Length: 151
Image 1 (tube, rainbow, N blue to C red):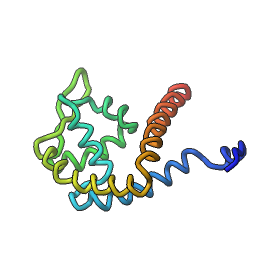
Image 2 (cartoon, helix red, strand yellow):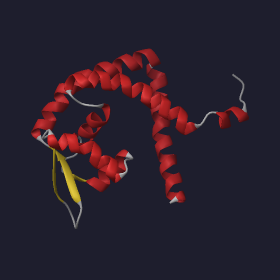
Image 3 (spheres, helix red, strand yellow):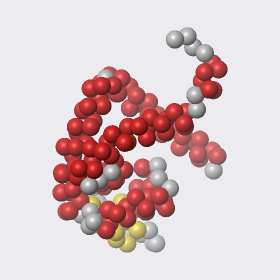
């Protein structure tokens, strides 16, 4: 396909990425529903599992590209289920940590996530996914830089 500078402007990056995300999240959500989680919840639990100690809500929001209020809404069902717990952090900060029940929930959900991941990568192509995954990390970095300059 020849390079058409005008086509770059016709395809909104935000809209295109959002459509791709919604489409793929539906597939992962259907698989993870078998374990009682959404893709967002599973991602948050796995992020917390990768930590040796509780993380501040502000730190988790920044890392996961969440607005603080959206993060709190996403975490609330996990707290109600006993999968995470809050504690006081430095100053007025709150920290969040994974509970033992949360660790068990990740173990229950991981086979469903793995099946979705393997199916997607097999259909999309391993090398294509590896290249795109690297590009998506770069997109997050560029967007964060843009937000810093805008804000």
